Each structure stands twice: as C-alpha cells, then as structure tokens.
Length: 188
Image (cartoon, rainbow, N blue to C red; front, side, top):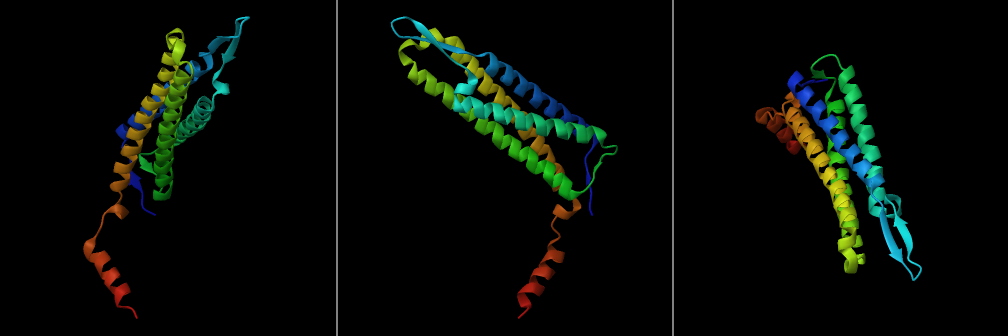
C-alpha cells in the first residue's frame, strides 16, 4: 500500500480553505434565512410573504449548505486527528479528492439555482422590481457566497489532485507498462 506525502503547509492550506468554505456557506445561510420577500396584492392591500423555503432553488441551496458543511467539518476533524504528514493510503486519498470534487459540483449547482431563482422572481415582479431591489441583491449575494465557497473547494480539490499526481503509482514507467501491454496483446 503506497502512501502519499502531504506536507504540513498543504495541510494548513487545505484546512484554511475548508474553514473558509464553511464561513462562506454560513454567511449564505444567514442571508437566505433573513431574506424575506413581501409582495402586496389585492384591493385590501394584503401582503404575501415569500421565504427561502417557498422557492425550490433556495431550498436546494439549503440542502447543499447542510451537505457541504457536514462534509467539510468531517474532513477538518479527520485532518486534525491525523498525526503525521502522510495520508494513510491511496484509496483514502482518492475518497477525499472525489469528495472535494463532488462538493465543488454541488456548490456550482447551488449557485446556479440561486441565481436562476432570483432571476425568475425578477421576471415575475418586473413591473415593480425597483421596490424589491434589496431582496434581489441579498439573493444574489447568497448565490455569490456559493461561488466563493466553490472557489475554495476547487482550490482544495486542485491541491489534492496535485498531491495525488505525485504518488509513486501515478507515475508512468513506460518500459515496465509497455512490456505488460505487449504480453497481454501477444496472448492468444
């Protein structure tokens, strides 16, 4: 079982990126929860309120916040409990890499969901969009926090991919591999 060297500096950087991701997602969560759209309607001027849980895109953002914060928190705990600079094994390292990759995809999709839901509400309220400008700005800010969290997760994923590339098993030994390929091709 081969191991991957992961220096102390890279561990600190990935730890800081995960903490920053959690901070961005918590800011996005606070914005989503506190952002309420109040739309007056009818002759009696009744007010209908829309919370984040009334919009499918914003609910999707909430689910992604829970998943990615949970994953990042677990990875922070595992990294802090690890004593040495060597990751335990390549399969574990691959799991972390693919987890970062999946988190990145979820964060981009959550950001797109937030932007598209906000844009849809802007179309719906096109005639009086200026009255609800604060709501739209907050919604775009929440989606932008997702993009910043994505950037942190993507950088962390890139660091893991570079460290994964430096494992002894990932380097190609052409002479060794070509003899194996030739042996397989020559078999009847």
